[in-house]
View 1: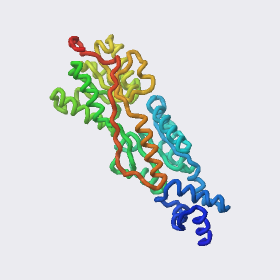
View 2: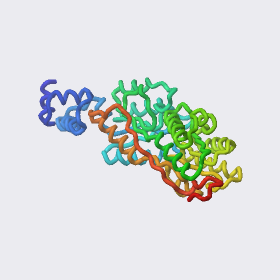
View 3: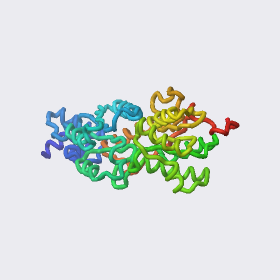
View 4: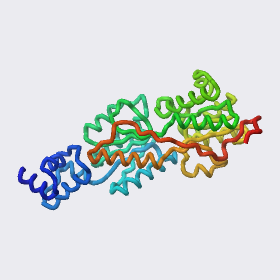
Length: 344
């Protein structure tokens, strides 16, 4: 064994200790060094250990929710392209209602020997979920990065948009147009991005109009599902409470809000303004073109890949949250509040 270590070390131009770390799958070895050692094994005719054979395939798992919401394919595309440029092959695993769970997809990817996994809007975003599943994954030696959601219980890098700042952008924009009765339509309260949007919205409404947090939470916030139908239901409730503008937690919900307004015989944006969230592909071409908060998808996707590859390479990124600033994109679904037509 000692002779073999010496041969491999000489061939790879590294120390025997480094060869030992690579053969035992230990962290702390740069990706290029690891590849040199594996190449030396191949050149000298030694068989790679089974674990290393699996992990060297260059597969990276990407687990996303359903693909009906166009923001998830958009993020998957950015992540997939970034992985391919680095020589990795993305394996897209999608959760579907009644289909495989996140745990089942994780097990399937681990069985196929993926080098790492990127989770988008997974159970890490659900405050009621058991976070032990991620610690078990870490114990198996599989690097992972979590996008959209945060838990202090999980030791991993997180990639998030600034949901609180997003709400400030939306409320400030609508207030400048003369709206004072602004509603917020979003998904179930157990999700971290939802909780953060509520915090940002309540603070922005307090800053702009001096409204008490309990008034904002009881009268101006409506929970529903992250879907077109969910947005329609939430917006209907907010319109019934005399809101002249509705901020939605996704573009799909915003399209539902526009449908709700039209069912009431209201014109968007003349009678009611609607703001989306994500700036999904094609959303600029809706009727009317949607004013929305643009999620920094390219920056977030590239950061997720860069961070994961650092983990795979044995130089882990800090176990903290990397927060990306969204931006307001003003289009045709917002205008002056009804009765405030002097404004631009």
